[in-house]
Amino acid sequence: MKNKFKIKKISTISAFLFLLLLIFTSCDIRGYDIAEEGSKPDLTPPSADFTYSKGQGTGDDYKTYTFANQSISATDYLWDFGNGNTFKTVDAKFTFPGEGSYEVSLTASDKLGKTNTIKKTVEVVKPLVPAALVPVILAPGFDFGNVDASKDPWRNSTLGGVIQISASSVFEGGFVAKFPSGSDRRIAYQELTVTPNTNYMVTCKYSQEIGPGSIRMAVLAGAVNDPALINSKIIKKEIGTNATGKGNFTTVVLSFNSGANSTIALYVDNDGGTISYVDSFTIALN
Image 1 (cartoon, one colour):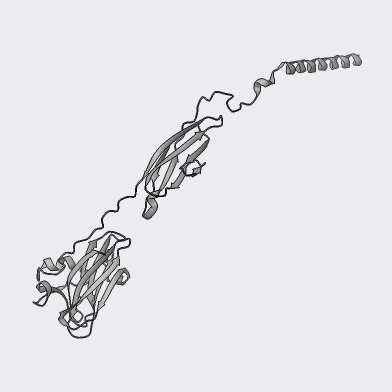
Image 2: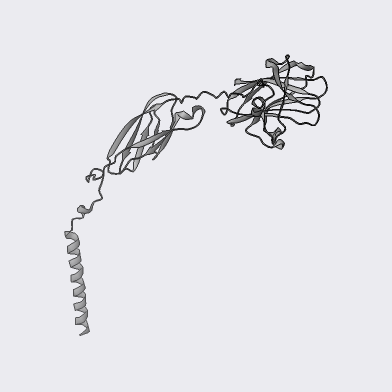
């Protein structure tokens, strides 16, 4: 009985294996080949596109452009900037040799071998440099006389007392700013709007009564309202010590670059050793 059961079991297994073999050999496995290039229609072919922007900054920064890839349905990219300058990155950054018109192309492709190319002309133009500001100095010669119109443009009560005005026929225009001797501290201060990173030249004239002492004429970086900050804010200065009489004026030239500042201040004080005078301020591009 046991032998019959074994024979029946073996026969059943053999029949099952034969059936599996018959099914497997009847299938055409060639219908399951992996798709190769061109073997299937590309329902979503690539479409190439890009945008670009000019570099910001000074000097030659205008020559450098950034290119942003806007392509769709693509996996590979080829940028062509001419003269053999090609890149296979998604986005690109390129510095052109100078002003002119340049053709830039982007080819987008996919894994099915489809490609699409777009070309755009980039106009590289050096930006115009705006004319530098030449500020107007108010009451530059103090020639309104001993009135507020001569004093107010030079007033800063947080730094010191307001200037005095002295009149004499020996002064240019008849009036000058006066800085007394002793402890009566007077200052002249006027803010001016300038163009950053620009060369300027300030001129003025000073004289002193005979005796010891000095007068300081300076250009300050930005607005200053604390006497303790004066020294640290000086861009350019001149210390006058030509104490040969109030009618003997010496010309001072302060040449400087405004640096990052859009505001500067003209500043004058004296050490109180002798009476000092200042007159005839000008400012010009240098």
